[in-house]
Length: 457
Image (cartoon, rainbow, N blue to C red; front, side):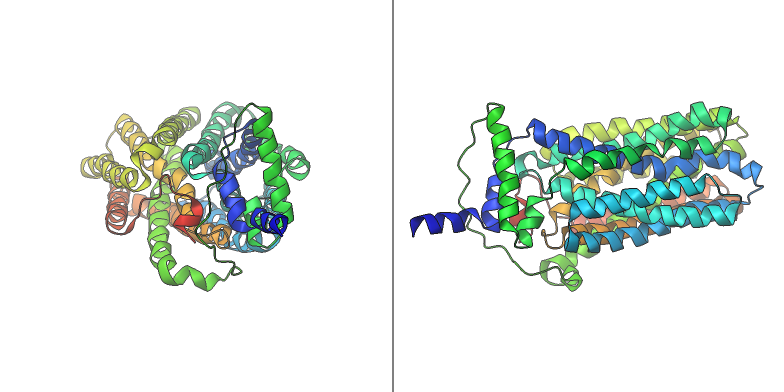
């Protein structure tokens, strides 16, 4: 009888969570983060590749500002579809299977982009590719979040997530060195590399034990957590006994309507607003700046690409600092400060009319670096505010607003710059960030250091 009770306690969703909470970050977990990080790295690269191909395509295909905006925006619209579709699918068939599907899709469409012959075919290829890239990041974010306990979650996850801005920066490096020599197709040839990631993803990676436990597959979840425990012990860690679980978790199956019920309704609306505001500004700036440098300030192709790379690099440095400090500062405090500070350089650009290229480079890079810390950490924050049964789908719906904001950003830049000058662009971006600051101040909650199951039962 006693052994039966012990087995039942071992094989429960609550005990799986309690055992994960006390685990250190071992080599096993670091390898998982690395493999998923490589996939996310090339997801980021794929998202931004078109921005560094665009200065060449504008002249090669004779593109109008409206066509440039459509090529950039339709990729983000595809990401919107992929984020919701694959987020929903990940709750039903598992995180790993969906990650394989998304990587396969965006690599296949990377090949298709090489054969685009004009704006219409490129729009179609980028839309389909966006479905894959849009699905990969939210599912990967849910997966990585579910692998680690509360005390280490912020740093562990954000040191994975920082790979996204590094991937954006890598796109700038490839664009700077390869596009002037080999043409725009070089950007998409490099994007074929993540096909190799599917080998370790398929054979070496475990499914999320939290997802398995939530689906009632407790024996499988126990086997994975036991493997993690053995890995920790082999490295010399002494594991504390799991803390007793007093919270009885909700075992209900995923239901999208729960996003708008109880405590999750306010969280959902708050997160959607933050995602939209942040990514309208971040991707509106980063995707258009190389083209603006060349077309407005008449810089050479290589200089335009180099300036785009500098801005991306500033975002990486700021993201690393955020990853190291956000557990101490707290999510809400960090976001309030970053939104407020991000408005300042954009306001200066709006008032001055963005009159010199050096002026624009310095202040855009500063604003981008500040707001990028919010952009790349929103996956962490969103995952903390939804339960396991809703996590991938909830993040997917949040990142759908990322895609809406990202698709709106280039269109706003294209319209405002052609009609009112680039100073008006920065005025709009500053107002959007001010709105984000208001939403954060009044509606955001703190999540640092709290177990996922207590934050979102």
